[in-house]
Length: 173
Ligand code: AR6
Picture 1: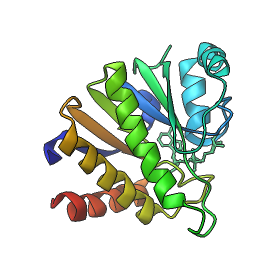
Picture 2: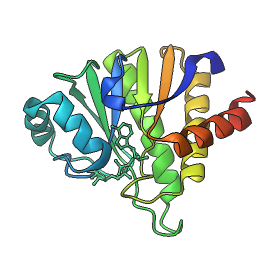
Picture 3: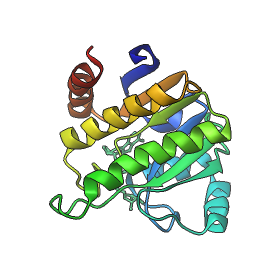
Picture 4: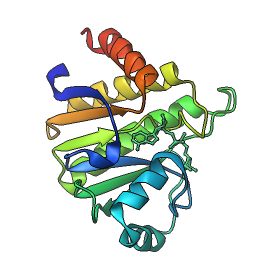
């Protein structure tokens, strides 16, 4: 199963996968960080569609087309804002990964790329977030064989090292 996982450093908007995941906010109307990059790369039709969708609660996921992106679909999920760990942040972040994987498979995707949800503007500690990402992905793959490739796109060398270390721990590298 671990052969399905790839960890790379790069820009998620450039990934040639069926679906990329967006770390959005509850409005789905765009923002900074990876959300801004995805909207810029996809073009204005993406915002038209997410406006129609009409928002997304924290921990859930919504699917749109990818427009000018190489990816056919964008899975918009809303991570929790970190506020010390006492507001159910870990459960909500796990929900993001599980619901995004489910939504991608239901749309028909066989490959998916994730950014590090909640670890930028929302300040979720990187290592804890990475553990949740890996654990939920492993659990999902144990129960569903549809996905053939899961790419974790790290934005910078610190994230890359963290992802590689946590991968060894969770998947037994
Ligand atoms: N490709 C891959 N990863 C990226 C890219 C990129 N092009 N750009 C940034 N990252 P953030 P959040 C990484 O802040 O914490 C937005 O304004 C970045 O280094 O994008 O979930 C939304 O609208 C970090 O590791 O998302 C929300 O309001 C990770 O992506 C809010 O930010 C996530 O950082 C969501 O905050």
